[in-house]
Structures are given as structure tokens and as C-alpha cells.
Image (cartoon, rainbow, N blue to C red; front, side, top):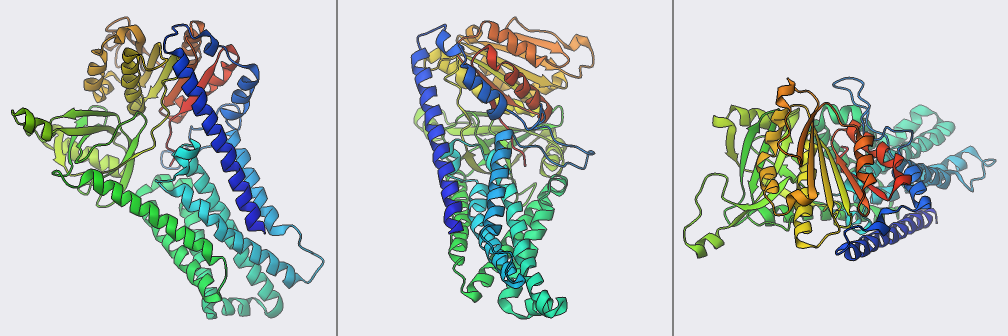
Length: 559
């Protein structure tokens, strides 16, 4: 019965979120269509007071006053993670409380101790298995709920981590309830002897140990310090927990094994989908070829020529496998650019038009900041190559998500910090093209990029050159570059009135306030970058809710 209630709760929440998703998509569609030939869009610039209250205090609100995406960094090597938003916290607390309630309600605690312990043991064990279904759904890269509910992979990643902790706690309660009950009758020594002597109990103990190891090594401190090692151990322990749990349930002929069937099916589906997706886009037609260029500021520009392209949308990311750098691990990166281009190894396209069309290749580009592990090794190898350029093999698994398209906003502000510019650049090109074609509500685009030194401009120079040459670009696009660590003020110069450069960091409140003074339509604000920048933009958007219609979108990948 409690399992039915749990699924009813999750199902009801999914229905509510699906209705929310449908409503917001419909509103954006209507706003786009009605704004195509309207240069003022005054109706959509005016905010609703009740809706503004909800966005400020719930939808966009961190738990406390400001901090959400900025990590708690105890030292350069010790990271204890980030904080959820208020809505995320409410859901997590409610879900945790529901699980606790299902474990303890309707139990007659005046009865025999062993009877009470048996009930707690059975309920906690049952819930641990049931919770593994959403746990594995949320972990999948091909999670269908991402598109269905419009919730980001980053949010599902957070929910996956906390559901995992709930499963660990319930498995511990399940095991301890058995040990305490058994020890009360025959002592601790006999209780442990029975656990190791009875096969189905031994397998259950193995599953619990695997869960506990996952819970420890998946903590933010270990996950961030040794990410590659964490992934290997995480997968191995997940397999060990499933095997242990499978035999624990099967040998005892327990009905909960039907949920484990679903878990295995979900994991198998996700892995199969990942392989098929990767095989389709990378195999055949000569395969994929990759050019890696070492750039100033410790970054690499990776340009992948795909065997089979996909329809690119701003905000997409993909996982890159580079056997020459890391034998079998993959890492997610935002797709910064896509175009039809020559092969990166310098091969010439045929002069014959028919042959040229047949040999067209689509390239996808990424900018990867070299840090530790895979990214550090990649930058080191590219820097050591002749001319800072190397051609290698790369398998691309993607694309995933599509980000939030910003066509329904009359005014768009894109904030980027460092390599977060890879998320903003595709939106800029997409919006300028849509403005030219008359297919979007956008009338003003403002790109604000915060970099440490002017040499970081090299990361996206060829793409920005193309964007700045687009038709009607000057009518709609302004770019503001803020250099936080200039070597001298001579480095700071503004090429034109629409492309300006400033020393120091931007005043986010002031910039948003200036745009809202002459706001066209709904103002859409997006941010991608360090946690401190994201939190500052979030704070400013919340403070401006009663001054006009403002919507906020944060692109993050909190692993």
C-alpha cells in the first residue's frame, strides 16, 4: 500500500509539472507570435505583481539570501558542494518526510520489540528498492522526463544524489533493524553469524556495503577531488549493489524484485541508447576527425568533424570520448559552434560541385578550459604538439537537451563568465538570425562577458567575427566585455559603440536596470559561468521582479 502511495505522489507531481511545462510553452509561443510585428511589446513588458512575488520568493530563490551555485570551497582541493533552491529544498524535505512516515506510521510500538523491528525492517527495505527506480531514471543521460517536464539535467542530477542518500539510509535502517532484532534474542555474535551464514542475508549485506561505499565516495569532497576515480568506483559499486540486491530478493522469493527488473531495464535502456546514439553519429562516412588547438589562457578549442550531423540548437551539450587522452571515460561540454566546413586535417574539398556536396562535413566546436584530470591532460598534449595543434580521434555522444530557446523575449541579456561564453555564443547567432528573418520577438540583445585577460578573446574570435558580420547585427546586438585582471589599461579599448570593453567587473544591478528603463517586451536573462557570477545575476533578477516582466535562466552542470 505504501508503495502505491509513493508512486501516486510522484505521479501527481509529474502531472503538475507536465501541466506547468505545457502552460509555459504555450505562453511563450503566443508571446512570440503576437510580438513578431510589434516593436514595443508593451503588454509583455509589464509584470504581474502576484507572479513577480512567486518568482522572487520561490521560483528563483536560493535557500537563504543569495548563495546557490557558488560552491563551498574549504580549500583549493576540498569542495563541499552547492545549495539547492527553495523549491528544490521543499521537494527534497517533503519526499524525505514521506519516506520516514511510510517507515514508522501505523506501527503499534507497545507491541513486542522484535515485531516492531520486523515492521521497520520490511518497510525500509521495501522503500529502498522502490526508490531505486526514480534513482536510476534521474541518473540517465537519456532521461525522458527532461524534455517532458522541461527540467534541466542539472536539477535531475541533484535529485539523483539526494535520492541516493535516501536509499543508503533506508538500506542501513533495513540492515540494522534485522541485526538489533536478532541480537535482542541471541546476542550480537549470533546475529552477525546468521547474516554471514545465510546466503540471501549475505547478499543483502553485500548490497548494503556497496550502498554505503557509494554514499561515502559520492560526497562532494571526494567527487570533485578525484572525479575520474569517483566515476569508476561509482559504476562498480552500483553494479555490486544490484547484483547483491538481486540475489537477496531472488533467493528469498520476495515480490520487490519486480522493481529491480525495472531498474535493470532502465539502466540497460540508457546504456543501449547512449551506444546507439554515439555509433550513429560517429561511425561510417569516414568516421569522426578532431582538431585540438591550444589557446591562450589554458584552454583548448576542439573541432569535431562528424560522420553524421544533427540539427544543432543553442544550449546543447555532448559527451566527448578521446581514447588518446582518457581511454574510455567521457566528459560533458557545451557545443559552442556548428557549421559546414572543411575537414580539420586540412583535406581539400573536391572542385566538382557534385563531389563537393557529397563530401560536405558538419563540424561542432567546443572550448575546454584545462584544469585537472582529462581537461588538464588534453591541454598539455595540445600545447606539446607542433604549432599547438593536433589531430586525433574523438567520439561524440550527443546531443543532449536543447537548452531554453529565447525567441519569445523582446529583450535578451546573456551573461557569461570565462568559458561560460560557449553557452551564450550559439544563442547570439540564433537570435540575430531570427531577428533578420522576422521569426522571433527579440528586438534587443545584450551580451555581457566577464574574462580575466584580453587574450581569452581568442577562444571565440573566429565565431564572433562571423556574428559581427551578420546582416542587421548593429540594429539588435550590443556586446560588453569586462576584463577583471588587465595587465594595463592600454589593453582596454572599445572597437565600436556596439562592442565595448571595460576594466574590472560589471555591476549587474546597474546593467539590468539600464535595459529595463527602455525594456521591449519580456526581458529574458540567462547566465552561464562561475557560481559567484550566477548567484549575483540571480539576486539582481529577483530584486527587479516588481520593475517589469523579467524571467531568469541559469545554465549549470553541478557534478
